[in-house]
Structures are given as structure tokens and as C-alpha cells.
Image (cartoon, rainbow, N blue to C red; front, side):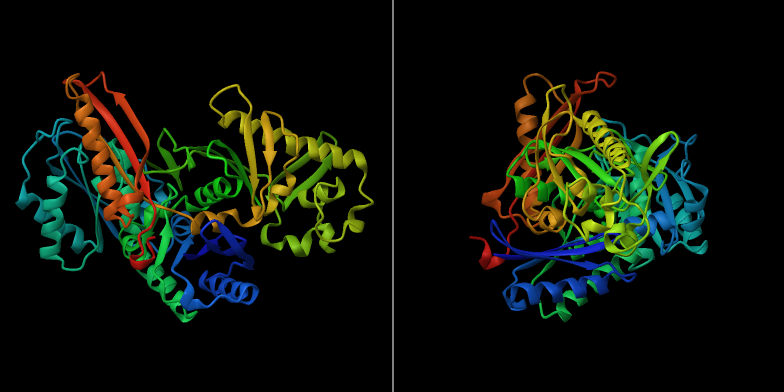
Length: 520
């Protein structure tokens, strides 16, 4: 099965062609302002490099920064109404209460509270007041809201208020985008609600992006279905992406980590992914990125949707290197995509981390003679800073005192030494520079359940089996081949502060993508 993997980064757009376990070709093209231009160039260059026929491609997988960039910039966001069912409780902390002022203004600041919501066991806090909701809906529409985010207390346990409200919106405002919190976030009202509001604000842009990506691939002569990679390393089709753009936010680091697992054949390790500006460090467990156990802040907004546990520092291949009285300093300022213009080894005049790596003999990039004049003490001091900071981040991410294997990927991973403190050994696999695109190409389809259950000792096995089966069913519904689906993670957390033997159970299942006649 030929898969075309594309990862759109801030500096480069990488493309790879993968056939089963073999990487047939890989290219890098400069990312363009409109993003699609870089994708067009990458597909063209890959075709020239490998000679593949567009009609032979079975699937196209894309990791994109479109949506996270729009949120960070506060641009291209829809006017969004955040409507919560939670009165008479939750009045003290209304929707958007913890949002940065800039972003609140960007989406219109439409915040509303209605009666309703549920207790953890599914019993209602207050009945659904249809007249009240219709009045709120009319106010939101009159105020200019065009997209709607619905949240309800404990909706992952009982979603009836959200689904009934969505039916009313479809009746009153046909075609208006609606995002439901029980489909997006996890337990925890504010984080789940915030993720839903972000998703709703991105729905218009998601429609444009999905259409643009599909058109770009089709214009390249490729008729295969297009998928986007999600935060957890699994896939969604373009129609799903139109509804859940928030699920793509962390696809870049996740793709790199999944690519690292594929290339190194290691299923449990630390991954150091170094680009032009930053180093992202994460942990692989059973071949998938370890997920963050706490709420994740995105553009100043606290959310609780699925995100990988990644720690980033401002050291990359383009990082500025300064040698001052107090010692060497590396980053966080970087030349970024201008590396081939400004770094010394490429004839520029800025001393970068790449120059240091070349001068130290760690890499052969550009013209080494252009850094031969560097003072050895300067090189050694900069190397110590780089090595110490990378080792510190790996040490902070590992779960035990035992050394862990470290897989170095990304174009800037030439900075990683062969002997890194805290690492049992360092692996730099073939095609390490395009691990992100490979991660997109080999992505699987996933399904997840995250819910509070009442678990008596006699029912525990039955409840876990129910959760596992629901996760499998969700993976199949998302496009996984049924026979290939397996459970990769089960987490059970007793909730002692709730009555009735309550426990939060999370189950994740993944399987291979089903593509009709190409499932064998």
C-alpha cells in the first residue's frame, strides 16, 4: 500500500512515500505563506525523486499547523457563542472566564449560561428549559455569533442536554456549525468547555482548509482519500477534520515521535525532535506518545483534550550562539528558515548551533572551512550548553532513574551527541530528518473512551470489558480495519471524593486504516 505522508512545519514541508515498511523517497520543500504552495512543491519534488504514479497512491496523510497558528495569531476565528448548561451551579465561573482578553475579543465574547447539566451518576442538576435556551440562542445570533459551542456539566456521562440543544440549533439556524463538548474534551468542565469553544471558533477555517488540501492533492493527479493526523498519532478523514479541527493541534510533535518509533523499531524510548528553532522531547510508550496527565494550555487557554506530553526548549539548528563574559549562550533566538542564508557554513554572518556542530565534527553540512577559524573554547562551551540542556530535558521527562534509549530525529538532531547524559544509548535512524512526515504516513486509526463509571467489585471486569469494546467500536467507526484493532492503553483511577465506587476509566484502541480493496 503506497502512502504519501506530508508534514507542514514552520520552516519546511516534508513529504515521504512509504510502501509498507519501506521508505521509497523523502524530500523537503520550503513552507509557503499559503501552506498549499509548499505541499504542491513537495509532491512535485517527491514525484521527480521517486517516479511514482499519482494514481498508484492509496492514501495521503497530512500533518498541518493551520489551526494552531490561527489560534495563536488570533486571526481567522469565527464569532462563537459559548453556551453552558449548568445553572443553578457553575454561575461563579462562566464560559470564557479564564481566556486571554485578546482571544475573547477575537471570537466576540459571547458567553451564556442555561439551567441544566448532570451529576456524575447521570442524574440531572436541573431540567432542560427549552424556552430559556431558545431565548439565549436568539440573543447569540442577534449579537453576531455564527458558530456554537455547547457544554453541559458531566456531559461525558450524560450528553442529552447538548444533543437536544444541537437539534434546536439545526432547526432554528440550519447549517450553523455546532461543537459538543462530550465529543471533544475529557472530564473536567472548564478544560472541556474551552476546547469546545476553540473547536467552534475554528470550524469555518477548517472547512476552507479541508477543501483546499483536498483540491491541492487532486490537482497533483492523486485520487486517493486524504487524512489529517491527530494529536494522539491517529488519523481522521477530511470530513472529520471539518468538524474537529482542534484535534490536529499537536500533530507535529506527535508525528515526529511516531516516525521515530517506526524508524528505530523502539516502542518505549525518549524522542528528541530538533528543528530550526526548538527541541521537543517526549516519551514513547507502546509505540505511542505518552499523553499529558494534566490540562494543557494552548495560546493561553487551558484545555483538556488529548495532547502528547512534550517539553520544548529554545534550542534548534538555527539558534543564535553568543559568547559573552558570563559564558556561551545558545537560543532561544533563531534564524529559523533563513538558516541556509545566515549560518556561517552557508556563507552567512550569524554564528548558529549548526555551525558549532559542524566545527565540532558532529555533522557535515555546508562548507566546514567557513567555521575552521572558530576558537575551540567557544565551540566547546556552546556544546556543553547544548548537551546539558538536552540531557536536562530528557531527565525531566523520563519516569524513572533508569537510563532510557534516546531517538534523535528532525533536521536539527545533528546537535545531539552520541553520548548523552541519562541516555542508555542514542539512536539516529535513517531518514531521521523527515521523521515527522513518516509518522503521518504510517499513522493508524484510533478510538478512545474516557468516562466516569460506578464500579462495584463484582462488576469491575464487566465494566472494563464494556469500555474496551466501546473503544474498539469507535476505532472501527473511525475507519479502522476490524481485525487489526487492538487495545494499547487502559487507565483506571478510583475517585474517592465521589460516592458509589466511582472510577474514571480511559481506554484507547488503534487499528490499521481500512481502504476497501487494499486492506490485506
